[in-house]
Structure formats: structure tokens, C-alpha cells
Length: 403
Length: 167
Ligand SMILES: [Zn+2]
Image (cartoon, rainbow over all chains, first blue to last red; front, side, top):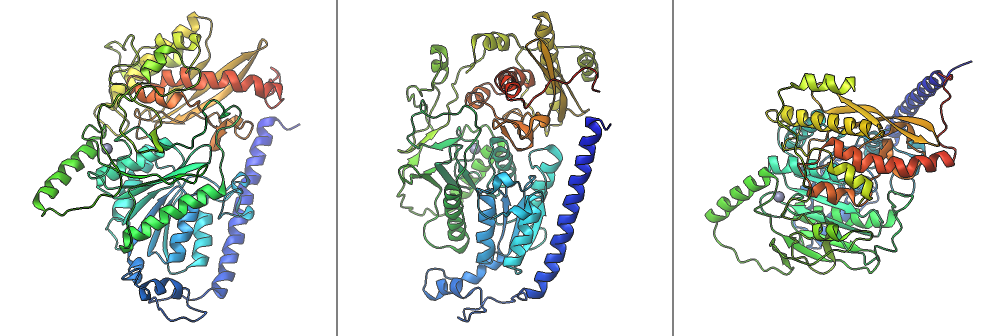
């Protein structure tokens, strides 16, 4: 009789075979679609005929909304995270005729993702970037695609990620025009933040809360506006009583609506930023419970933990000093970082000492936006520190193995 | 955050000093030594308290960790493989601990078998950068998760005790 291990191995073999079959099928479909697909279009035309996919976009120019719509083809955008927000973001940019899309994701399409937009059940098991490229290329063959199927937060991949965003633009060796963060976790956001601060790369952050009823987008210009490490994570208050929010038994909820709205807000901001129309948002929140959209701008924090953020701030200051002063009318509330003892953020089931520890410097934020937590100035944990040791790393590794 | 017992356990783990991640070639080896020192002390303390429950080891450059953890329920020992990578942003962000064989069995997990930590973990970790290390992650992240999830998975029949003679 086969052992469990042997059966597991067999399952894996069959899974791999299935993936190969799917890839073969996709390649066949590609060939088939190629026959059906329109040829590439050299120059965007404003001519209104049923065969022109760009006529309604070029109408923006005729109407005077956008000065030069064709410019969209000169831009390259990197989308990190091709999940509920990132896939829709990539589709919108593809349909708008962006020049180049670079996609990063390490995940596979799963049936559990089918409450979201974009991916289809028959793509289950394929890597998200591969499945996305396949669909997007069919929608618009004029877009150049580059995909990377890996986790950007590990050492090796991170180096490659930095190299690609700094040299993988439309013109080889040039940086991409924008990096869009559509990831769902803190580590990946911090990794993107680290890379962009080091490179001076302008990027936009996006996010949907774990309870699926709020989200945000944020434009980050290193050295100028607050980076992701300048303050504790910002959250859009959805006015839900923490005590009634049941977290037992689930990690996160998700709604295609909230993700679609956030992707729409994100790409709208991208288009306004790249094509220079309307007002570009620095931070725009979305509270789905009350349909409230808090907005603000937040300057970089001179005490930011990221030394590259501080370096970019110095460079920005120098650049500003050499430029003639331009009066900017600030419509939104501006956020300053100061030691503002806000009182205590109540979390259920906390002790007095934890309440005290929960009090830290809190940026002065407009109504509807808050920080996930605060960092107190004094040490939170007291106790012994590891002692100086004569042992080498190898000794310690060996000691650990012997335990 | 956690109950009194966890609090006491954590306060006995030595704190780390070196603020360095794997991209910091000069200081990462020092941080790695401190990680091992804290982990060794933590395992020794667990053994002394008759609550030995995990082992971890890393690759040579300390960026990839794996090991086992075990949980005793009604006198039976259940063992699971644990693994995680050190993110480039460590120690500013904690690694995502995975128990791959439980992937798909509980809603308290993200894809790839990454465990879903309580809302108290992130603020606690952020307030203790760079003093908290992997031993703290085990005590405050994995231990409470196992304590809640494993009995539940056993009661639902999703985790079944491996008979000694099956392998
Ligand atoms: Zn910063």
C-alpha cells in the first residue's frame, strides 16, 4: 500500500502536470486569439470608427480635458501585487493604452479569489502575473508587458526588483514613471517604500482594510511628502465599534466593490498625475460605511526611521532653495508631525499599563483618518539584553541544533 | 495583548540590540548572533519550565528559517513544520510565519499557510523595534496562534494524530 508521503508526491506530480496542460492550452488559445486579434496600432487616432479602440479616450483631448492624451503611450508603470486591486488597476491602465506595464506577484490564481474582479475560474492554478499578462495582451496588444513571479521582500528578489524599477522603463535603462503598490501586507509596503526612498522613485500606495469597508490611495514623492515609514500606518476610520467587530475565526474579508472603487481612485490619480489634468490627490480615503472621502497632504517627517527618506528630504530642501518661490494654494488640511498627546486609543481587553504604552506621539490628522497605533517615546519593553559573547555565529548555530 | 503567562514568558526572553536587516552586510552577522542567543535562551527556559515546544534553524546567511513546533493536546503530541523568510525590511517588520501543512484548513491563515496574527501583534512589534527578535515572534505570534487553532482543528477532525507506526 502506498504511504501518505508517496501519495502526497503523486498529488504534486499530478498538479504539475495539470499546470503544464493549462499552459499548453493557453498557448493554443493565444495562437487562436492572435488570428482573431486586431493588429498593433502605431499611432493613436481620434477618428470615431467602430474599429478604433482609442476614439473615446482621444475625445478627452478634443473636449479640452487632457492636453495630450497620446502621451500615455510614453509612460511605464510598475504594479506590485496583482490581486483584487492590482489586477483591476492593470486592466484599466491597459485599456487606457499605457506604454508599458511591469507586474510583480508571487501568488497563484485560486478559486477563493473569485469574489473579486478580473481573474476567471479556468485560470486557477496559474501564476497571477502570467494569467494577467495573457488576458491583458488580448485586450490591448499595444501595451508592452514585463512580469515577475516572485516575492519582492526576500533579499535576492528585492535586489532584482530595485534593478527593474530603476532600469526597466520604456526606454531601456530608464526608471519606470510610477510604481503602484497594490499589495495586501505591511512587509511588502515597507519593502516598496524602502526601494523608492533609496531610488527617489515616485510611487502611489493603495489599500483596502481587513474588514473590506474602507480604503485609501496615497501619492508619495520621496523627500517631499510623507513616506510609508514617516508615521505609523494610517487608517480610514469606518466608525465601527471595535468591540462589536468580530475577528474570531477569520483573517480578512474582501468585497469586489471596495477593491474596484479603490482601483478606480488609484488609476484616476495615476492618469491625472501622468497626463497633467485636474488636481492630483496626495492622500484620499474611502469610508464605505458612510460614503465619506477624507483627503489630506502630509509632509515628510524629519525624524523618519528610514535614513534614505531623511536624505531625500535634505535633497528636496536644497532643490527648493534654488527654485523661485511659487505660491501654492492649499485646499486640504496639512498634517504636521508633533508630539501631540492625543490621549488614549481604546482597544478592547487591554490593561492599564498597556493603555499607558498605547500613548505616543500622534500626528494631527483630519476627521476620518487615524493611525493604526502610536509609538511611545520611552522604551516599552524592559528587561535583559543579550550579552556580549565570544562565541562565533557557527558556534551558536551548532549549539541551537544540539538543544 | 496577551495573557499573563505569555507576558511573563516574553519578559524572560533577552532583548536584542543591533538594528540591522539582511541587506546590512556589516551588521547583519551581529544581529544574527543576537537572534541565536535569544532563541537558545528561550528554548532553554522552555525546557526548564517543561514547556519545550519548537526548534528553528537558518541557512548560512540567516535569511531563511525552518524548523518544527509541537503542541500537546489531551496527552497527544502534534508536530508541524514551520518556515519563514527574513524580509529585507526586518527588524522594522516581522517575518510572516508559515505552517504550510495547515494551509486551507483554517480561516486564520493567509495563502501559503502564513498564520494570521492578532491585531495586537503589529503595534507591539512596532513599539519594540529593534529589541524584539525571532524568539519574541515565536512567543507572541506562533504560540498564541497554535493554542487557539490546534485544539479547534483537532475538534473538527482537520488535524489527526499521526500513529507512531504509520511512518
Ligand atoms: Zn519617511
